[in-house]
Image (tube, rainbow, N blue to C red; front, side, top):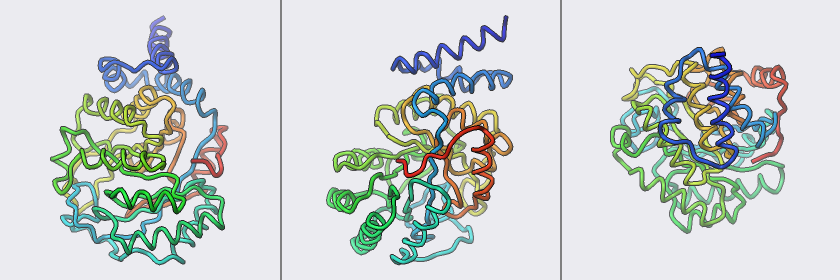
Length: 332
């Protein structure tokens, strides 16, 4: 009887999400603070919502680190920041041929979306020219969706990217507004929100997510989900901090696998129709529980991340097949 009552409790949140109602703060906290023994019932309820909007399809995304290790920002989680001493590769924006080769690799990995990511506060005019040139050719020659992540944008830069054929623009909130000054001081939370609004104004799909494990409270995690719901972020990457030696957050602990699953369920309940992507850090935080994440999430990054390695693509493909799920090709 107790198990049935618990299942009904979580199913009531799923039904609330499907009815378009937003979870209360208390309900959100209940998800994050639930007993570990309830996780399978919680994921079953999250899957009810995920299946309603996405069935059993999984969207795959691949990143290329288009510019590395030359960032003037002081983001505490990032190995490429000016305050990091991590031994990362440093190079200016990759040439068009290399960006095109990355797009072909994305197709080989069955990724529907190719993400061009460049570290920095925002793109220079020359960097924008290079990205625009590459995007135009990719759009003309390959059936890929293109996501760009180049930092803070000006109006004319957003317009140029949209005109070139960029479908989606990523600019993560990363953490809560209250926690933001402890993570980054070289730009503000509000500047990130402004860039997302600018992206929407110019017709690109907004992509924005979080990094869990940077000292935020459970209440702040719920508030981040609320913010991304209100911003109408079409895609929400959920990263779990990979604490890289040489960064200010190198000693931060990992998110435990069961807690990571609760976070994914929370975002599915609060942002029911939005793409929820299991992103950076999934391999070392979720570990052997990675397959369960897809009962709440409907999207994955495949391959390597910016300066850290992902798991072999064959493992991801096999995981999706073993779950009875299906890769959704060329989907944004």
